[in-house]
Image 1 (tube, rainbow, N blue to C red):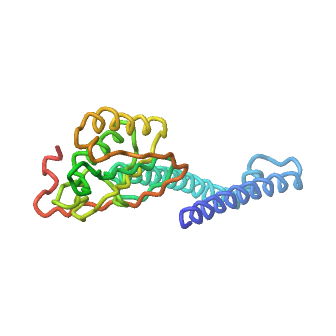
Image 2: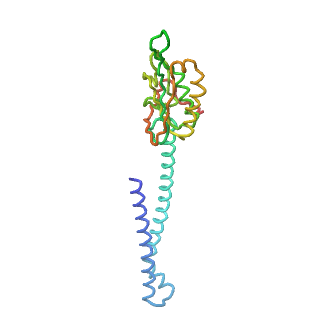
Image 3: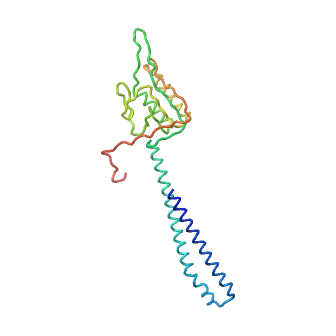
Length: 238
């Protein structure tokens, strides 16, 4: 990655400067050793050619350290920003996700009664909404209906013969996939079967039921963001 290359170049330059600084210090020490004990003014004279270069190297070393510190801060800021963006995308449901979870099927079998033709019950959106809400309340982290991701902006509406999910007509059986703790999700489905569907007269007559099975690895698609035409961020920032 470009950031890793920049980091390597800066580190290599820093190492080179330190090496050159040590080299000049050793050369100065050797110069004094070769000439033997000399008066202080002669020692200063022997070191003079290197003093300016050593000072320059030390200044460049300090500048490089400051640049390295700024670079590290920039990398950390970028990492935190990328992490927050990913979390926001997950919360909004606009990124594809995968993980363990549960797959449930909502359908009505229909029935044959005396003096009546075989009939099929039309599922309303209430049963589907109850199931989706039960899964959310059971700590589901992502939900999809018939392959469509459910987000905060999703709509589930009855259309007369089917149910519109996010504005697209869907028909039974409805397959609901949820990623999360499988035991908790199963309890949510059980709640719907026992306390929503079972007491419903139509449900018992027409064989409405929810079948569920745990799935070790589900893949749910990304949802889509709504298109805003009138709503804009508040100028007050609140």
